[in-house]
Length: 405
Image 1 (cartoon, rainbow, N blue to C red):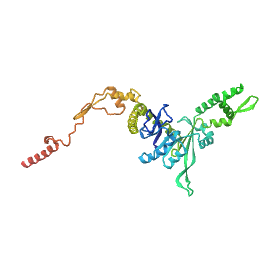
Image 2 (spheres, one colour):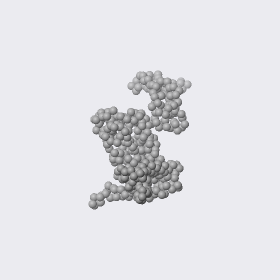
Image 3 (cartoon, rainbow, N blue to C red):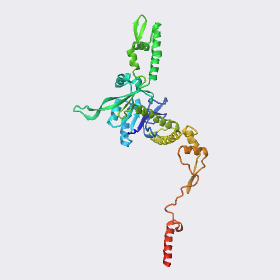
Image 4 (tube, one colour):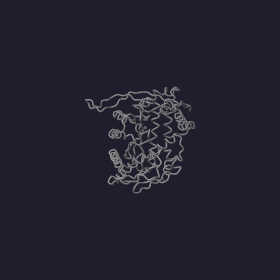
């Protein structure tokens, strides 16, 4: 069968002190810095961990608003359009789903449970979802898949100017973690309802928030007796511990789950950017230098991820590497020096630990012998050193010898 290729989509914020960068704006800073920021969006191949695409945009732009431009640039740049985009709920909106369908791009998106249709799907399928027979040991949670008919506006218009709607089928993969649900229920009881109930029983006045809790979750039965409003309780707990992954391409719940959790590869890329190649601050003051820094950082990140991939492959083969930090591993190799001279170059000696590391990373050992001595085209070649001339001379001599006989 077809083996799907998945591209993780995510963004991070880069803080800056500069007031001269147009894209630096106040926004939701993902590092918690009280600074202006530039947002950096990246597309990462989940199998190779290599970043494929990046774009800087203004720091006050929400993630959900970036998908339309991303789709346009994917189409223009020639990135594999058969690959499936994997995104968190920050990118989930009805409009974005429609745009992806219209562009014929595959996707797996974490759906917001606050959507009305999402709540309806959960309510319709909850009893089947929590059934023991829905438990899947591979992903250690309950799951089921259902299909829904999805109507989306096309580019065609009706005579009155309205968009003509088309219909397609989407897969809705539902997952339930009962541990999360149980924690939410305990929190509702012990931290929300019980403090209010104890105040009511002690005739202590309630504040505005506590009155709202009483009206939502408690029924006054008279004579100081109260009971739980089970309808409100069920509504509150309906989406707790439930995740919906929505896709137009992936019909298997386990594959969709794994694709979603492997999107952490993009988080590895952000770690390389911020911790390894110094991208936690741009340290630039102008728009031009900022764009240049972003491009160089993107290239450095790609090289860093190639190195990290080699390390991961070595670990999977059971090889014991001296350190688990990229910086420490690179520092160990940093003492290998290349000396370049007029007719070539050579590398310094490679120690035993360095040999072990290079072998583990499947990197050929550098030779200490000089290399690179190549005759230049403009240099004259001595006729005595020309092998072709010697061969031709031998043929002539043989002919003379035969004639003399």
